[in-house]
Image 1 (tube, helix red, strand yellow):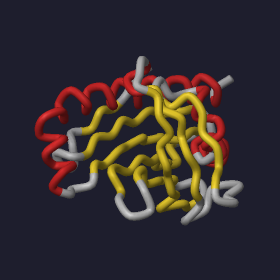
Image 2 (cartoon, one colour):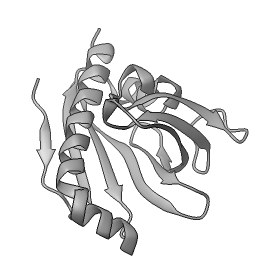
Image 3 (cartoon, helix red, strand yellow):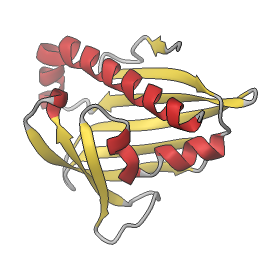
Image 4 (cartoon, one colour):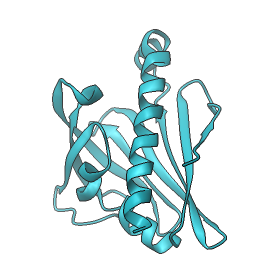
Length: 161
């Protein structure tokens, strides 16, 4: 399986892409269903819609149950959907109602008979997050890239069955 690991757009961003032999509609249904993330992510082992949200839409809320680095600590992350264009992009902010720590998302591009899926994250450029990324960024960036490759490989396997 071949992954494209893109050079950071900024020092606070990373992304990984893979081709999937499935149409964008099927890929979209999978990446925008946060309740399935536990099947794919090496860190987020479950998620559920919250605050009356029942599916993907800008402003919808959910929380993800995370086991940091796959070993701990374990905690819940509050998330809010920030971009939701069916068959194109699904993005969400992680943090609180007042503070966004980072953003995660998926971009989909029709590619022949399949779809190029790009998973990405972007750390918010606030001073505390810049300091965090200056100290731990190289290590965390590599961990996140490995996690994105794992997530996309698992999604690809399900979508290509």
